[in-house]
Length: 111
Length: 116
Image (cartoon, rainbow over all chains, first blue to last red; front, top):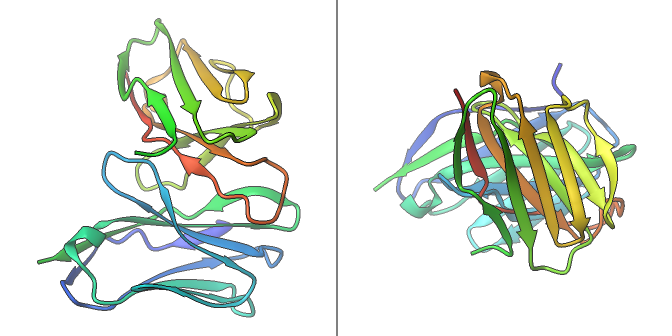
């Protein structure tokens, strides 16, 4: 079993849709959760950062962490074609000093 | 443009060639990382340097040899590579490599490597 599972997609949605991206994990010691966005031919850039459980909102983006279910989500409201990218979840904590990444979900928002 | 610059952006090499990838960060960070990114697979951490000292080597084959002359520069020397080494090689930096608190990694755009 992988430490972090992420549906690779691809996921296509119409412009304006609400997008839900998810990751599950097996290591209950993970405490720091991040979402990175990677455009084609670019490196990943940090989008959202959350510590422990709860929600965090930043503009059209909301990150949720449910540690009891070992499940994290990223919601994108009013999605735009410029949101088309690969979204990577990443996490660390406990004895894991370095980030463990999911495989990424490729998202396309159609105009 | 990010504060982490990688060169070259693309590299094609034969299995007997020797080449080097370069990474430079302008963020004043003390930790630098090499990752391998292959299609449909999670980022694989290869090496970590913290204050110029190598702190992690994730069982990377010896045909990959890192070098960190100072906190701002990181190299990955390549020799006798295999076709399965073709991938996107990403460099990242962060404030330090051991602080479990907010320790954001900033990535370069990567070097797309093709081994023929």
